[in-house]
Image 1: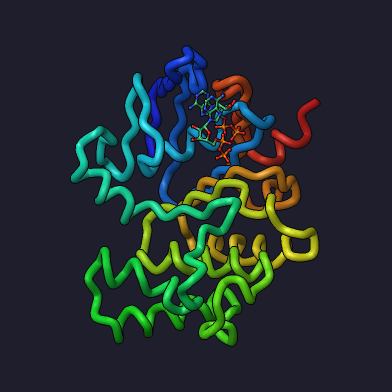
Image 2 (image 1 turned 135 degrees about the vertical axis):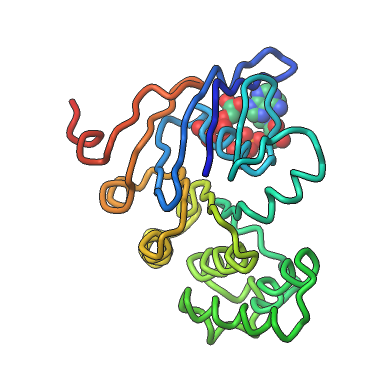
Length: 228
Ligand code: ADP
Ligand code: ADP
């Protein structure tokens, strides 16, 4: 589903944030990306839906080469859903409206169909009772589950998670990880940047470690967490 070949990115100040990263993610696989802050994890996964550009190498997502061609960026954004650390919900829209918005505007679904699908997704993430509320009335864990439902509403083939539980109080981490776990069990292809070792151990098919803009280790969770 994702093939990254020798991807490099640097900023104008010559800071080389990605220094030749290669990686593949196969269909249905759950890849967890770990590593210290500033090592380039977020930048790397943001290249997969063209939120970040890169200067060298190649990235293919579902067979499509990511380039500066605007047309394929739109296609890619529909295929790759993303969940951020800071939920990024629209505060002036209800929970239900947040989830319905993209299918209506991007996929041009009729309102009734978008609403039906949105309600199903809200039920799936355990938040149906909150559908009429606004994001500010929800806990962080609930907001993040809405964000997951919103991404799923576009029926993506791949889901990216960028430290989805890092902004949450400890008691809310579990409810978000449980939703992610059930998504993984349903066969979704997922790339997850997280420091949650328990999640990585139990849910990841593969764990990669980034450091200073490079992938320095790649292993199954069993090998990764038992290595010295
Ligand atoms: P991680 O997700 O592993 O914490 P990031 O991908 O966020 O790492 O790392 C980005 C690195 O690139 C950070 O060190 C950050 O300071 C640097 N960076 C981000 N944006 C810019 C920019 N516009 N110019 C220079 N450096 C940048
Ligand atoms: P995030 O919250 O995703 O980690 P950052 O804090 O890394 O984002 O970056 C926030 C903004 O600041 C981005 O637009 C990034 O490009 C810019 N930025 C981050 N680090 C640097 C840096 N060292 N030099 C210049 N711009 C930077």
